[in-house]
Amino acid sequence: MKKFFKTIMIAVVIIQAITVTAFAYDKVNNMKSMENHIYNHLENRDTDFTILYTGARSEFEENISNCIKDAYSKDDYLERSWLEIKPKAKVTENGIETTLDVKYLTTKEQENYVDNELKRITNSLINKDMSELEKVQAINEYIINRYEYDYTLKSTSVYSALTTSLAVCQGYAMTAYRMFNYAGIENRIVVGKIKDVSHSWNAVKIQGNWYHIDVTNNDSSDKNKYFLVGDSTLIENNYTWDREKYPKSFNGYYK
Image (cartoon, rainbow, N blue to C red):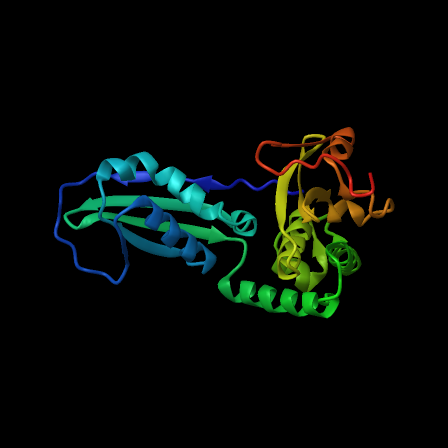
C-alpha cells in the first residue's frame, strides 16, 4: 500500500480583540458542537470553512486538536478520505474564529458518484433473504472480480478504483466498507502493516462475532485465504495492527 503522510497543523493566533465583519459561518459555544460541525463539513468535502467558537478560550486551546481528530474519526471511511488539515484560529471580540483548510482524496461530486454507484451495485447483489454470511460472500466476490491490484500505487480512492478497476489496498477496503454498510453489515476499516508495509483491510460482524476479511489479498492466487479469519491467522502471517483500537476476533468463522 502506498504510504500517505496525513498532516494536521494547529495554529492559535493570539491577537487583541478587534471588530470584525459578521460572516455567515457556523457559531458554536462548546467543543462537542464544534466537533459535530467539523464532521459535517468534512462529510460535505468542504475545503475551506470557518466556525466561530464562543465558549471559554481555555477549553478551546486545551481541546481543539482532539476535537478535530474526534470529528474525522467518527467514520472509518472519512478518516481515510483526507490528506491534509490546516486549522488556524484567531481570537476576536466575538469569539475564536477557527478556519480549516482541508485537502481530500476526492471531491464532493466524485463522492456522490461513489455513493450512487456502490448503492446500485450493492442493491443488485443483495436481497432480504440472504444471511449475513451470504451478503459478505457476495460483496467479497464482487470486489475481487471488479478490481485488479494497482502496482503503480496511483489509484488510491474508491472513485479512481470504480472508474479504472484498479485499486491499492485502501481502495479495496474503503469499497468493501461502504458496500458492507449498505448491506447492513457492521464493519471497520483496519489500518496496520504486513511485514512493516502499510496495509488496510476490514473487520466484519457476523452473528455477533467479529472476523477479519482482507479483500485485497483474497484477490490473489491463494484466493480467499483471508476470508473471515481470526486474529491468530493474521498474526501468523505477519500482520500487525493496534489490537486495542479494533474489535477482537477470537476465532475464524470456519475455525
